Amino acid sequence: MNTKKELLFLRTFAVSISLAIGVVTTLAFKSKKNTQFDTIDVKKINIVEDDGTVKMLITNASNFPSEGDRVNGRVYHKRTKRAGMLFYTEDGKECGGFVYDGKKTKKGHSSGLSLTFDQYGGDQVMQLITTDTKVGDKRYKAGRLVFNDRGDYETQENVMHINKELKEIKDRKKRKEKYEEYRKKGLLGGVPRVALGQTPGKQNGLFLYDDNGKTRAKFIIDSNNKIKLEAYDEVGNVVSTWPEEK
Image 1 (spheres, rainbow, N blue to C red):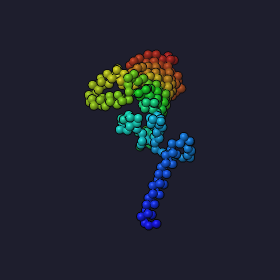
Image 2: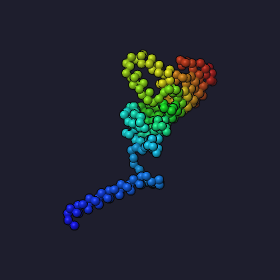
Image 3: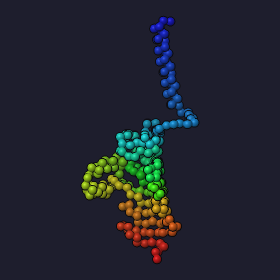
Image 4: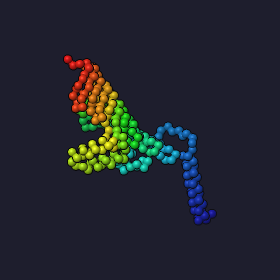
């Protein structure tokens, strides 16, 4: 066999092997059979439907969707990157997630975990959250289940555009007036209405808020193991207590 024929044979052999490997690999990934692994090191996983719609995303912090990233056709605005999971509806809208972080700081540490469930098309209406912050010798810990009110017509896309518009308004009074205008239309704004858990001040109990997010009642046991039931007016004055203060 001369040199030209040898080269032709080797090229043909190489192409054939490459095609065979490609076919086998493709068939392996299309297989319905379960594949078992002992350990997988991965930076990001997309759980997708047959049509390619992302239904769940598992990611490290660096790949967390933020400004300019696109998932299911939606372009994200800038937000803090954290490791965790994000959930999506059948039509590709983000509907909640689980994120966490924790690190040493110059004066102590800062950490937190958050599991959220969103209003359809909007932001979170239920959140399970814990925080732990240490500054010097002082440590602040809290954990609570919170239920929020959101605007009836709020969408993640509109909020992104409205926030950009508000940011460009330099006059604080005018910016606040514009915010209230959007809030009254149900296009913006979220306030807590019910919280159950522990505050950084070590008050453990049930906290109720009005539609402006102001505390109106709380039933707690404080750091001194005293039980209190307190009601407040719209400006924060105590109007009723139990047991009655002597």
